[in-house]
Length: 180
Ligand SMILES: C[S@@+](CC[C@H](N)C(=O)[O-])C[C@H]1O[C@@H](n2cnc3c(N)ncnc32)[C@H](O)[C@@H]1O
Image 1 (tube, rainbow, N blue to C red):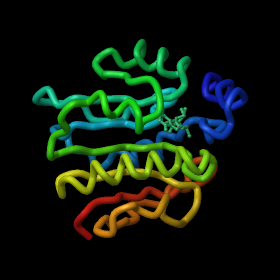
Image 2: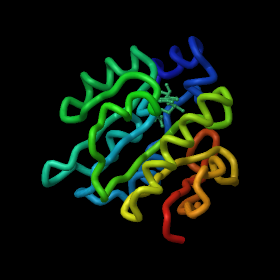
Image 3: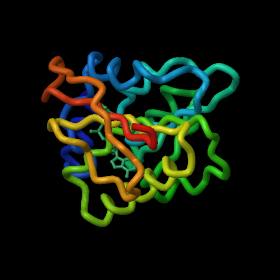
Image 4: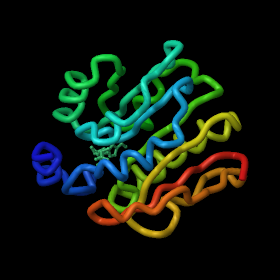
């Protein structure tokens, strides 16, 4: 917790939160993750959501994306079974050669505070992945009661899945996928 706060002081716009997600928010973010899909978690931070992701069976991978060097180092130490990619998601995701049909992206990216360029690059990277298969979805929270961003493909739809009051501030959980 102290670690995320320190990184927030160093780079408030990219970190986007003073405190990690609460256990209630982490449970709401991970409740609809099966244990056979590949999971990509963007902005894993200090692992507040990561530790609630169900264990991967059948060798389905867990890949953590974190742009902050110190947080990425800590994630490697904490989650030895995961593959940790350090850098911005839209760049580092290119290292994954082939993505499976059944894929869940879990994201904590603070879309309201990052730069316009990073916002646009990130939205395009996520939507291109989702658009390629109906078996893929994004799970993302916001601190506002409105969808996190406007998708860059017309056939992707948001659905609200939870309101979480036990978080500072209260949050809303959303899913984005091809089927309504
Ligand atoms: C609000 S914190 C959330 C941390 C943790 N997941 C939680 O819920 O407590 C957002 C995290 O996303 C990371 N981040 C922001 N933009 C990113 C990007 N484009 N690619 C990878 N990580 C990013 C930040 O460094 C930070 O650790």
